Amino acid sequence: MSSENMTLNLKIWRQKGAQTEGKLVDYRVDGVSPDMSFLEMIDVLNEQLVRKGEDPIAFDHDCREGICGMCSMNIDGKAHGGFKNTTTCQVHMRLYNNGDTIVIEPFRAQAFPLVKDLAVDRSAIDKVMMKGGYISANTGNAQDGNAILIPKPIADEAMDAAACIGCGACVASCPNGSGMLFMGAKISQLALLPQGQPEAPLRALKMVHEHDSLGFGNCTNHAECEATCPKGISIEHIARMNREYLKAAFTYHEKTRT
Amino acid sequence: MVTSAVNHYFRSSIGRKQLVAVTGLLLCGFLVGHLAGNLLLMVSSNAFNLYAHKLFSLGPMLYVIEAGLAGIFILHLGLAFKLNMENMKSRGKYEQKTKTGRGTTFASQTMPYTGLILLIFLVLHLISLKFGTHYEVTVDGVVMRDLYRTTIEYFSSPIATAWYVFAMLTAALHTSHGFASAFQSMGWNHGKYFKNVKRLGLIYAILVGAGFAGLSIWCHLKGG
Image (cartoon, rainbow over all chains, first blue to last red; front, top):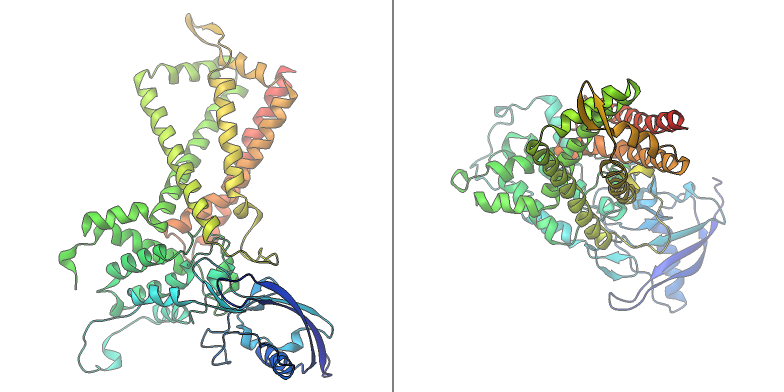
C-alpha cells in the first residue's frame, strides 16, 4: 500500500489463436505505480514487450471507466479480480503489494471462444440481445415523461437490472458457464416496465431459446454470478425471468402477437 | 406457436430445471410423509405394522401411487443428470483453480454427487427393507407382514446403521441446497421473503436428516 513503484510477477495466458495450444507465461513488470489501474499495468508490460520486440498481450478494453464491459479477464481465479462491484479497469494496483504474483487468464466458457491471449469472443451475448433485448413498438413522437406512471420502487428495480453492462463475468464465473444473470437482467428490466409489456412473452421465449442454442450452460442456482457481477445484479432477476418464461411458454398465442 | 412454445419449454434450460424443481419439491413432501409414518416405529410394533398393512391394503391403488413416485423420481434424476452433463461441457476450463465459494456452497457444488449417493441408497433401501425378509404377525386377529421385525433386525448391524446415517446426512446436504433452489427456479424469489425460504430449507434439511438418521440409530439401539 506504499506510494513507491512496485515490481510484480505475472503469469499471463498466452495463446496465438483459437486453434493453437496456449500456456501461462511468466512475466516480471517493473515501475508499476500504485495509482495505476490494472489495465494500465498491462499497458506498461506491453510497452516493455514491444521494446524487446516481442508480441504484446492482446486484451479487450475500451472505456476504462467501468461502464462498457469490455475488460474481460480472470484475475487470480476470479472474474474482474473478485473485488466487490468492480470491473477490471477499476481495479487499482494499490490493492496489490510489491512482489505479488498475479495470475491472469481469459474469461473461459464454451459460449466465449478464445480469440487471442486474454481476448475472447463474447458476441454470444449480443446474439441473445438481438433476439428481444429491446422494445420495437413504434411510438411516434416522444410523449411527456410523466404520461406513463411507474412507481418509484418498480423504476428502481428496473434500473438495477438495467445496470448490466454485458461484460460476461456472470458467464465466466458460473460453474456451469450459464448466461442467465445477463439474460435475466434484460428480460426482468423490460418486464418491470409498461413499455416492455407488449413484447414480454415473445421476448422471454426467443431470448431463452437463443441462449440455450449458443452453448451457454444451465443455471443451477449457485449464485456465483451475483457475487461476481461488477454491477451487483441480484439473482432475483433470474427468478423473474424464470416466471416470465414459464408464463410465456404456456400462455403465449400467435394471435395476441403485437 | 402455442404447441411449439410448450414443446420448447420441455427442451429448454429453464423448463427442464423447473421440472427438476417441482419433482424435487414433491420428493421433499414424500420424505415428510415417509418420516411421519416411520415415527410410528417408536410408538409400538403394532402401530407400525398396522400402518404398513393399511398401505399394503390399498391394493392396485398402491401400485398407482408407487408408479407415480417412481416417475417423479426418474424425471428428477434423469433431467438433473442431463443438465449436469451439458454443464460439464459448457463450463469454463480454467488453468488455475477458480476461486468460487462467494455464491457457491459445498452443498450446491456437490448436488450431482449427493444425488448419486441417494440413488444408490434408494436401491439398497428397497432391496433390504421393502423386499427384505418377510415375517408375519397377527394383530387383532389379522395376519399381516411384520415389517417392524424386518426393520429392527436390519438395523441390528452397525454397518447398516452407519450407512443409513451417512445417507441421511447426504440427503440433508442435498435438500439444504435443493429446497430453496427449487423456489428460485420457479421464480419465487423476492427480497421480501426469500431469506425465509432459505431458512425454511435449512430447517427442513436438518429435521429430515436428523429425523431419519436418529430413527436408524434408535432402531439399532432397539435391536442391539
